[in-house]
Length: 302
Image (cartoon, rainbow, N blue to C red; front, side, top):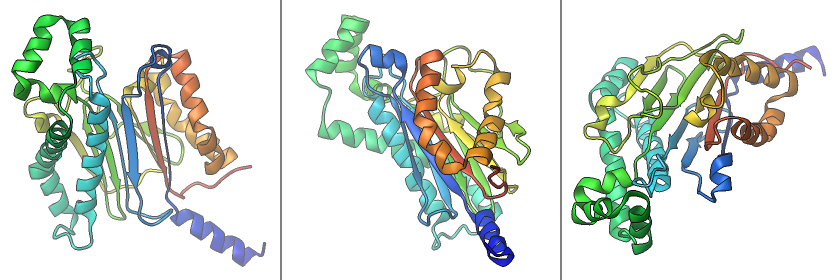
């Protein structure tokens, strides 16, 4: 390849934004024949270009949250739908300060209300089944079943309870949103890895905030930045819980950067499902959903 063509290729690579996303059923859930409660999806209208929206969600999976696999799907759909509106060309919020103000004032409320609309519509189409209620009674007792049957309006959102993590990457800014557990990490070109949204020290053990909570919008943390990292990693808590310390988990930022630089993005993406399955088997046993967004700032080293 001529020097001129090589330069053109490098310039093109620098402008690319690539994305990989995978979800795996937890090893313990496989053994119990339980469904994957996680969900993840993305929006990238122009391949390898911005904007990119990535959203993942972890359904609670408890006996009382017996439709949380649907709840996580609705959470992801909601985030992607509303973030698309935020970056649409016809949007009246085109400057950074307007977007930031909107997110802080109204956007989080819209996420929760849209999610609840989806739950309400799902229940209209399919009420709680006798099998679901019988299983609830078996797991939680007769009183809990009766409470769900007699106070459906008070209990319905718990049935679909889920977390939410979402990332929006545009040419001018990045927006990170988080409700509940899970992890968002950013990685620079040297592999230094940080959390744009600090861990919530109020969450202990398996406690988490949820879309099903009263005033859930108040618990949605957001971070609005104009600097561009090299990579963004987003994962449900099954990933971090597979490590024995925060320090060891954070190392995945540099690990993924090194692998991509050495092997190439497509090769790492092809291996991702296997990585996550091995991690769950050796670690938490939980479902894991993991997404990675990479800019073209660093090049492949072979």
